[in-house]
Length: 251
Image 1 (cartoon, rainbow, N blue to C red):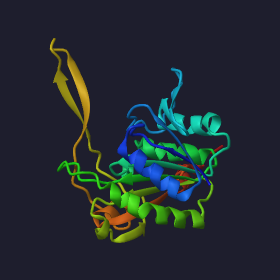
Image 2 (cartoon, helix red, strand yellow):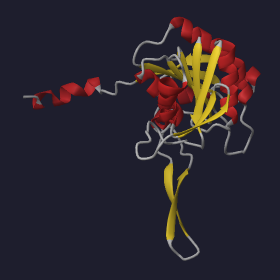
Image 3 (cartoon, rainbow, N blue to C red):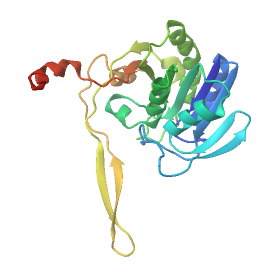
Image 4 (cartoon, helix red, strand yellow):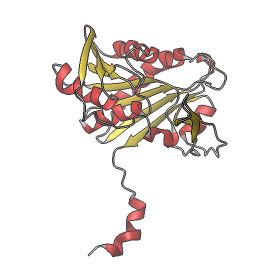
């Protein structure tokens, strides 16, 4: 099995090496095309106004000056001699759940793979960033290979990508696997206004945790209970339930 590995945290991110090792346990031919620099939060963006610069790091490992979406396109259309059988994106530093999936470059890489009709899976490792605790990469490295094999055995239908989040806990404390819905978060982005040395204003986007009403059966609920969350996501964003509301507008 040929596997393309990418991420949004960049070519030097520790989670990328974790995912590469997982991929090597699954397939005989593993390629890596990852962003040259951190591309977190860029969602499904393309680089259209600048050239893409590709750098060979080692055999079958490349860094691209571009977005995660660019990396998937470059890997499939240019770098690999044959299209991959599977695309793995991650392992992201931090969870990608609920509304945050719309911002995630990790999810976007899997979206692009799905658009190219290639089975694609995004993996993220939650951690307690408030306390500055170390990221428990061993949770993903221990539990991901067997879980991925089971998912691939069942198959991934066209137009669907799989979003997997691993809980922030010890390996032995993982409660199991739950198939979950995408939850909803209270928007946690705020503006931090500052002034430079010449009193000119500049701004940082900052994230602050908000109190949440966590619904049962969601990705957030699963992680809080130390379950691995597996959420199938689809490319078709049509709100089918709302179509009848506007049916009388059709002529």
